[in-house]
Structures are given as C-alpha cells and as structure tokens.
Image (cartoon, rainbow, N blue to C red):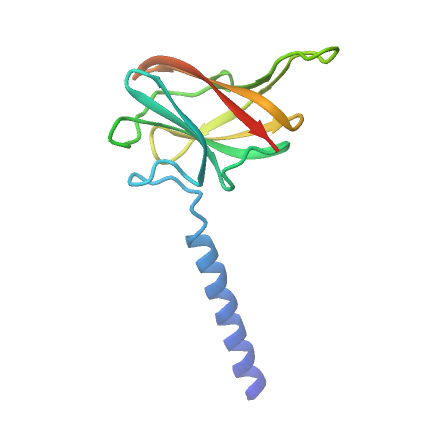
Amino acid sequence: MKKIILFVGFASLFTLILLAAACSSGTQPTASNPVPGKVIKAAPIGNNLMVTLSNDTGKLKNGEQEIFLSFTDASGKAVDVGMVSAAALNFQMPAMGSMAQMNDAAIFTTTSVPGVYKGKVRIEMPGEWQAQISYEGSAGNGKTSIPVTAY
C-alpha cells in the first residue's frame, strides 16, 4: 500500500513540475505582452513603430535558434504589419579580408498575436552582425538595421 501511495505522490509531483515549467516558459506572446522571451535588441522601424528581436535567452548565438520579431506602437501594443517573409530579417556580416560577406536569413511564421512572428535562423559564426529588418503590408512599410553580436 505504501508503494502505491508513494508512486501516486511522485506522479502527481512530476505532473505539477511539468505544468509549472510549461506555464512559466515566457516564450509565448500574448496581447498584454507582445514581446516574448528576453529582448536582444529593439529599434524604430518607421510609421511610428518599434521592432523588437527577442528569444528565450536575450542573446543571439552561433548556430540554429528560434527567434521572435515583434512590431509595436508607442503604447507597446502589437501592430499587425502583414505577412513576414524570409527576406524580412537577414543577418549580414560584411566581408573581411579573404572571407566573403555572409547572409543568414530567418524564416518566419505567424503567431496567435498579430504583429508577432516566430522564426528560425542559423547564424554561421560568432561575431558582429547587422540584423536587417523590413516589412511591407497593411501598416505601410519600413526597414532598419540593428547591430547585434552572436556568441
């Protein structure tokens, strides 16, 4: 009988831990918090909008990773800028010496919050990159370039 109670107690504790981890991940955008995870960089992008690049750590890393782009107005409310294509975010490292210029494009999908996009990118190497972000759609168009460091 003690073994059964101990097993049920352990299973309940394990379930609670998994539930708490899922609820506290902080990587899902909401209407009240349209910037998921931690901010890597933010900048104005035109039409009185801000764009924020974020992920779960707040740091861009060398290799494959998941990232978010969030477009917000002056009050911090998400603004739907339309569909975001692979060309909407490109990480560029200029040519240096005999090394050619590198371009690593992100591929995005929409999220449940209009104006927040989830993407994947593979950064080829650590170093200084330019995040070239653009949009064109229902909110007009805009573009910006933000210096970022990949670790």
